[in-house]
Figure 1 (tube, helix red, strand yellow):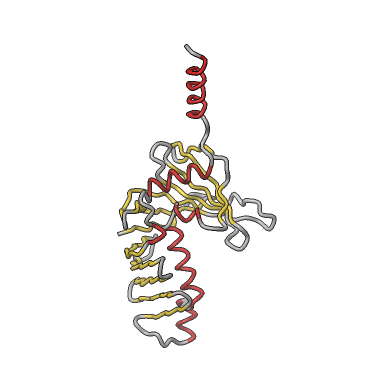
Figure 2 (cartoon, rainbow, N blue to C red; figure 1 turned 45 degrees about the vertical axis):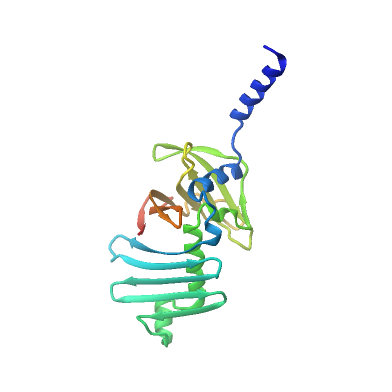
Length: 237
C-alpha cells in the first residue's frame, strides 16, 4: 500500500473516533429537531394540558410569534381562566374575562406583568429547546459525557449561564444515534456557584409532535432529583 493511501486511511479512522464536542452535539440535535431552521421565525399556536396529582387538569392555549415579540397564554383550571399577553413591552392580564381587577385578585392569581414575562420566558425556553441553547448568555461546556439514565445510555451536554441570564446548571440528554433530546435536568447552585445535588428536577420527554415543521416533545413528565417524586406531566396537543 502506498504511504499516501495509508495516511488517508489513518486520518479517516482518527476523525471517526474523535469525540464530539458540546456545540457539535448541539448542532446535531438542532438538525434533528429543527432541520429547516424554523425556530428563529416561529409563529404558531398550540395547547398544553398539565396533569398534576390530586388536581384538576389545567389547559393552556399558547401563541408565540418570535418576529413580532408576541406571547399569549390563556389558562383554564376548573372555573378560573387567566390570560397573560405580552406584545413587545406592553402587557395585558385578565381574570375570567375581566381586566379591571382588585388588589386581592391580582395577589391571589399573581396577575401582573412580571408573571406574564415569566410565562413568556418559561414557555419560549422549554418549547424552543434545544434551539434556545444557542441564545447569548448560554455556555455550552466542551466535554460531552456518556451517562446511563433509567437504563438507557445518552450523550449529555452541560449548560451554564451568564449571571444576568440564570444561575441554574442544566444537563441535556440526547439519543446517541438520532440525537433526539429525551431528557433535561437542572440543579440549583449555592452562593459559590457549586451545584446542589439535592435540588432541582429532571424532565422525561416522550413521543413527538410536529409544530411548524419542528419536532417538539409531546409529553414532559417532571420529577424531583432528590427523591424521584413525580410532579406532573405537560402534554402538547
